[in-house]
Structures are given as structure tokens and as C-alpha cells.
Image (cartoon, rainbow, N blue to C red; front, top):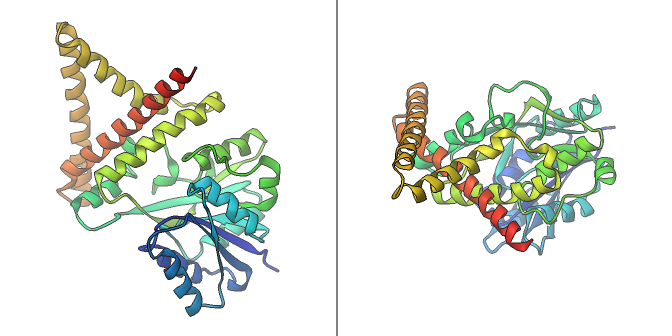
Length: 333
């Protein structure tokens, strides 16, 4: 018999996309009677719960349960859902993604074949709304200059062992071994969970055949808030696991600090003015070339401007969040 799969979903104010997720679950090739959906809702103030209730009424053959997440943070929601879930295998999804029809089946197969202790796939990133800004952000969210070597955002990724995967699927016994999601981290909870898996001798496996549509942020302000949080909480995670730091994670804060330092010294030091101008020029040129290349390849002229803006927002927001987290930590010492 196929193992029972619990699909756990932390969400908050996802009325626009929660039905898309549930419809995608309904279309899974995995036996419907061997799946359950546990939604940990952070006390949504929109119509998220009404949308879920309406879907339950229309499709009573899919087991769906909604539980409260009063802390309103993702790791707490995941833990609440885990406490309710009954499945031998847990598949973690989000309220703003759409898994491909074979997502669950492929995840279960990879686990049963022993490819990894936590398995995941690739995001197919789409715009969060209409308009050239949202389209540019979707392209930016998968561009190497913006996300580095995050293979799950790359369409050309190959199967293999990786540091982390988005969402992930794992056996319930894994949680008993490495512990639940860390509720002191407001973001980076997936990465931190995967760090503990690897430290306990487990493997994190990326399978590009496991695919899900992910909706990127709809505007630059939302993108900035997202990456500021990423940078801020990344430092908190790295302080616990300093061996996991990578050179790419140091680049954005170092870049922001270099610009700030040169800008402060520029009024009094000619070399600082020259250095600031050179750094800005080289950075701007690199982003412009990336924008032109993307615009030509995808035949979207707006990417000439949109891609550089999106990458710059990501770099400055992530770097600033990281620096602010560092300063806050030093003040508390």
C-alpha cells in the first residue's frame, strides 16, 4: 500500500492563491485517498479560510484540515501542522505555489529509493502580478547574479546532493531524529532544518523532475522587504552554524559596506571619490549587460531596465539586512 502523505502548508492571507494550490493537490497522480492536507493558518484577515472551506465542500474526497497558527510565523506553522499530520511521509508546500501533478509521487519515489533524507525540486518562477515590474522580478529571482548558486531556482539544474531544497519531502522519523523547525528564525527555517539533517549524517537531494510553480513578489518594495528579512535572519542562522557560511553570502554586505565607507570618505579624500565612482560604474555596467542579455534572450525589452533594478534591490536589501542584524547583535553584547 502507498504510504500516507501529509501535505503541510503554512499560510497567511493567501486568498488569491490557496485555491490554486488545493486544485493542484487534487490533480496529483498520487492516490487521493492516501493524501491529507494540513493548513496552518496564521489567523488570516482576508478570505483564505472561506476559500478553503468552499473547496472542502466541493471536494469532500480530499482530506483537508485547517489548524490555527497564533504565532503567525512560518516555522511555528510548520510545527503546528506536523503535530496534527498523520502521514508517514511529509511534503511541505506553501500557499503561493502550484506543484506539478507528479510532485508528490516523485517525492515519495525518491524517498523510497533512498536518494535523500529530504528531497525537493526546482521552482518554475512566475510573475506575482501583471506588468513589466512583476515580470522583471520573476526573471531576477532565477538569475545567477541575483540568487547565486541556488540550484533550485535554476532550470538547468541536475539531480544531486545539495545544501538545501525549497519546501522538501521527508519521512516523519526524520523530525524525531533532527528536531522540529526552529521557531526563533522568522526566515531561513528550511535552510537551518537542512543544516541539521546534514550534520546528523543525512542527505539533502535535489531532483529537477520534482517541479512547482512559485509566484515571485509583485513589486520592488515587496522584493526589498523579502530580501531584507533573508539577510537579517541569515546572520542569525550563521552564528549558530559558522561552518556553513559561503563566500557568496559575504558579498552583498561587503559591497554595501564598501559603498557606505567610500561615500563617507569621499568629501575629504579624492581616492575615495574615484573608488566610489569606479565601483558604481562597474556594478552598473555588469547589471546593464545582464539586462540586455536577458532582454534579447527572452525578447522582453523591459528587462533592460527591470532586471538591473531587481538585482540591485536584492543585493542592497539582503546586504543591509545582514549588516543591521550584525549591528544589532554587537549592541546586545
